[in-house]
Amino acid sequence: MTRSLRLPMAGGTVADFTPINAPLSAPLKPAGGHRFNRVAYAAAHVVVDPFADNDPWLDRNIDWERTIAFREYLWDLGLGVAEAMDTAQRGMGLDWAGAKELIAHAQSAARGRPDAMIAYGAGTDHLPPGPDVTIDDVIRAYEEQVAYVEGQGGRIILMASRALAAAAKGPDDYVRVYDRILGQVKEPVMIHWLGSMFDPALAGYWGSTDDMQAMETAVAIINRNAAKVDGVKISLLSAEKEIVMRRRLHPSVKMYTGDDFNYAELIAGDEQGYSHALLGIFDAIGPAASAALAKLADNDLDAFHQILAPTVPLSRHIFKAPTRFYKTGVVFLAYLNGFQDHFQMLGGQQSTRSILHLSELFRLADAARVLRDPDLAVRRMKTILATVGIE
Image (tube, rainbow, N blue to C red; front, side, top):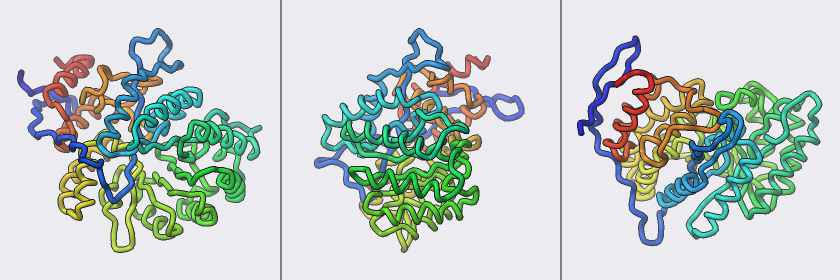
């Protein structure tokens, strides 16, 4: 079989393309397990059941076997799993009822693996924002989800709250909510600051639309509660802002980069520090992430960058504006790479990116060496192209 295929280009043209780059091999699990010098979580996607007889825009239809198998794959690479986050379409196809099921399934799988590092998103997404929602309502909503995760024996990622963003009158309301929740948690949590480019409903989080002013509030809350905060995941797609915040955090508090544009340089760090990782792109480039982190642990910075540098254009494409649609690219790569047999998503989200976007993703995935079986990827890409009339 020829690997050549015809991919659409801007302007309505079609050009031949042949993937030529040998895929990166998934690093073999060393005796004693992977030993990285950064903590690295991949925010993992969910796999839907394409044969469910329901209304896909409205109903959950998760293939639990394939969903959990993908988490096992990430653990085998030495990566942690950030569960029930926005990559899993939390609040964008996966509601709290579905998230509870996902958390229970994932925690059950994790219990069987001593090497399974996993943490779970706890937020307020079962509380719809509205004019009658009070700060006390937000606190109770957080408490409910935190109690569920802790009841499962899980670690918590404290997610940003759409209801809080809508109800808060200013920074003091954020102080009140976070001080209350952090004062109650059993173990240190990760706090997630998700920028409005990922979720427009979170504009003005921490009480200001100015990120640097918002950072003042966030840092004050975090440092005052440092004993209850393992780290902060910041997703603003700004290396400069992340570095500023990283340098202001209490020494015991980790910075987890959520910057899918600049992750390589932020993980590598500088003379004043570095970021750990909690990234949606690590779902899509797991073997590259694992191999690069192993090189970094061996103090081979050149090899670290040689592996990750080709993945950055791919990630920037997947996460391009409107950034909230990045999940489509992540799932598309999972389909091309054989982790699922279809390109379907919760809420019909597979339709959020154009065939031009997916075609450029294919080219960039080849350049990044993350098409793990190019022949399979070509066959599956041709199936998608046929749906738009390219045979």
